[in-house]
Image (tube, rainbow, N blue to C red; front, side):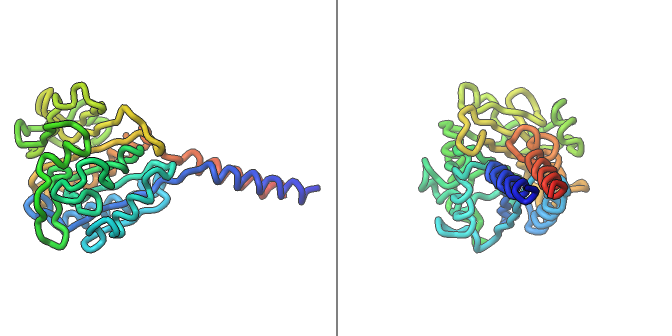
Length: 289
């Protein structure tokens, strides 16, 4: 009889496993637009994020794509993005170098609707951009691509005329920013969010630092139209021309860690509790054997 109970328990366990969707993380780490963030800074920031215990607990698999992995629709990064679109789990891409390669969005604006990165977000996944103007251009192969310009972000967000052009840049942490990203200090953003352009859009903004009511950075946009994988989000953070951040630690690494652990872990659809329940279930099964 015990053997029968054990078999039933095993079947129940594997039934539970099929309901647990893990979350995966991909970095795109370069090459960079060197006037905005150096390759060295990117590598150091990626290491800070990857090595963090909280990040490791949130993501089942973490992959880092660099130069040569990003060119065209059949590239490793493009394939990862398409495989993680509509797969029933909420996954994350971090553009740690601030550039957007052709594997995500073919330049110059050849995929105005239905690019790999737009499909990824619309399915309910998350993109985090650091340093340069989000979706503006690529530096793949070490050579600057033709610019998507402002139209890249406008197309992915589906907001005509959207811009992150220089305006008012003296950012100070908001109350939520102080709580969520405690390492963040006042800084100058060269590519702030133009907050008023999101009025009446399909996005809600959460602002972590601002210069005034219409100029913010960092911030995250949350889609009002959830997809099969969850609620799509796009964060743009510390879009500032700093090859090396003047203060230590580099906020572009530790700040992303704090954003993910202190905000995204609660707001996104991660399955830490499900993993813990799985471990508890397996422990119970072994006791009943």
